[in-house]
Length: 113
Image 1: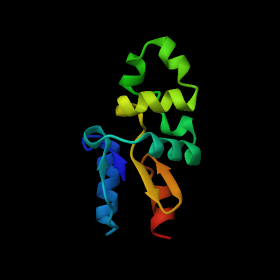
Image 2: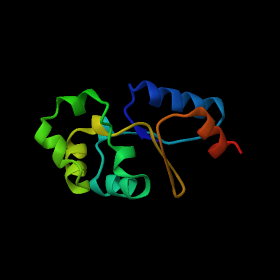
Image 3: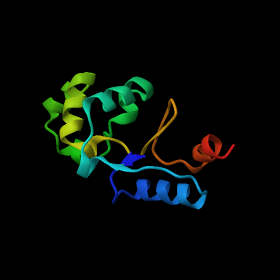
């Protein structure tokens, strides 16, 4: 699981995994960073619109010209590496699957079925 430790959605996902006795490792990309390669893989599997958090305060604080440039995956990745709050969370990597966000129904289907 990747995310930011003080994020409510990450906390919910962690609590859900713990309640259901599912072990996980957590990577806080706010404190430990994230690689360009990892972001590129996530975008390849899930899509830029799923990974890039355009609802965040960080997104709204970016200059409009920079926001427009971020339709390019390379540009978006560069900015997300520097501003990890732009990455939606949590990001769950399970085998070849990437799940983004917390949805109890999807988690139940993916991890308990």
